[in-house]
Length: 159
Length: 159
DNA sequence: ATCATTGCAAACTATTTGCACTCCG
DNA sequence: CGGAGTGCAAATAGTTTGCAATGAT
Image (cartoon, rainbow over all chains, first blue to last red; front, side):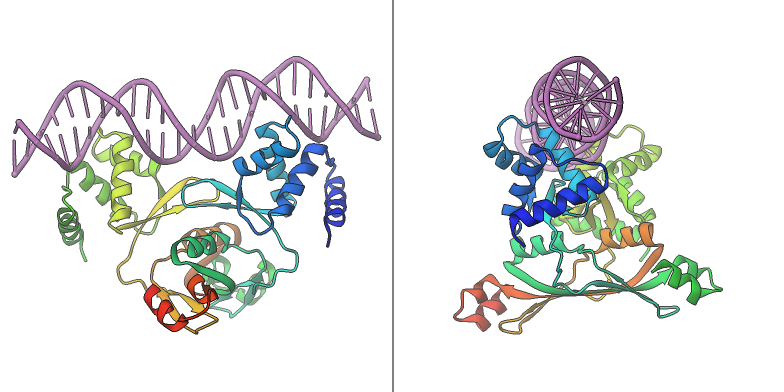
């Protein structure tokens, strides 16, 4: 999908929720799209946006980023030093999804969000290891299952 | 291992690096040991420490926590809101270790640190799912392998 | 005219640092 | 004495918020 298409799609997404695609938001989006492979901090986004649209405020960038996280266009990842970084969210996620496996009822719940970006960044920086894919399963119990009783049914409700 | 034993062990650990076990540090340690299953923030640790040792400063708690992270007694985990929480580090980790699998040379590197505490906290809060164990493999390539050449050897050096 | 959006500055929060003071070997 | 450790207050850094001004429909 090219830039114009994506922007149009996100414009619709915004409109659905009663938001507008302002110039500031559009420039911010373009910067993010031009850095899909990076993990930009808010400050970095701000600097890059300023190049194309000098009269923008930092707060606006923060507000836009927050909005885009809400719309699931980008993902917010907090690094070890406590600074937030933002990653473009690829729609066709070629990563395997994470799975929750209930050890009591065997129920399997797939989670398609990617929670490992921060860890993968760390692997890159500290181990020189570039992650191509990952597998993550959690084995445990839903609280409703631990309380016993109608486990099968309750578990299915959660998924 | 009981409290006195652990404290003694950590005292030795400190001494090895030229640090002392001051009253402030000991009280902080006790608080952390009494909350091994929790994920306390620095502020929470501070409050709990103050109960037992009122004349302590927040900065001291921060400095102690930093020290204990360095000594690998506790782990620092940054939550989604950017606030750091500290977890006691169990020596006999019953979790499977994380693994890096190099897709080029097949090298397997085990990592025994636990990087999933934050995610498991999220699962607990958002999904009502208590994690008992997990499996995490990363598939990717070491940079030295991507550059080609003496892959086997380089990879082994990293582990 | 209304209402979302903006820029600016001020506020906020978690964390770190500078510094004088203390304590122990 | 000398250096590690401390408490306090001030500084820092990232982020959020209040508010008056703007601008699109």
